[in-house]
Amino acid sequence: MSDSTPPMAPMDQFLDHEVPTWPKVVGIISIVWAGIGLTCAGCGVAGLAAQSMFAPQMEEQLGPMPDVMRVSPLMMGQMAIGTAWAFVLLAAGIATVMRKPAGRPLHLVYAIGGLILGIAGIAVQVQHQLAILEFANQNPGNKWIQQSPPVYGWIGVVVGIVLGLSWPVFCLIWFGLIKKRAADIAAGIPQQVA
Image (cartoon, rainbow, N blue to C red; front, side, top):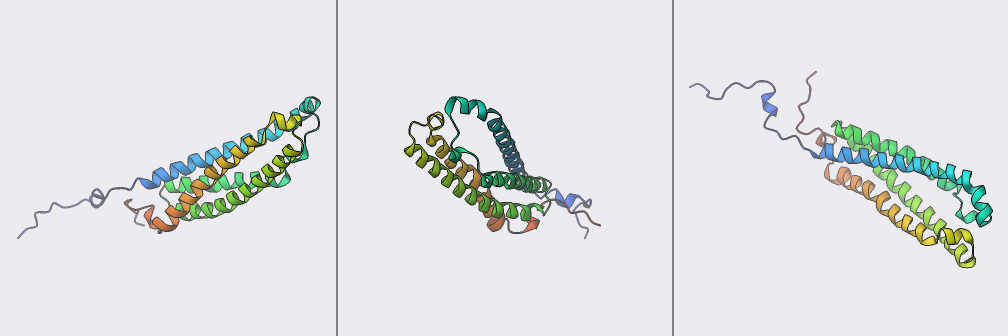
């Protein structure tokens, strides 16, 4: 009795397997998110440069800038670390789009570090905004406070919480609880035989 199944070419065995699309989607979102982080860091550096350039002219109109409204060295350090951390996310996104198993551990490293950095950053920003609010309550006629009311800073804190923690939390859940194996990223992709 002859077998009626036609012979299979070596690559035909992979045609029936659907290639999962999630690695590409998650990787692209990570790349975009990293790009946003790097752009925001660039804007922050440009903002600091502009502040130092225009501060003398503004101080002529508004008086001396209150120390409480200046960017602290701790905030600048966090900005530098956050910029470096965006490169970790960029590498994780690229590895995931390319379906490299390294995408999973890179995302986990990013998520854990991102949560630590995010929570620390939020704590510093809240303390900074509370200090500005206290200064505003004690100096309601200060022109700097009138120019930049404290409510704007609180809006920034809320946006920072949502944007700063959402993707690290997602990555921690997705790569830590759902896609637990590095092989999940390459599922459905034919492996090259050495």
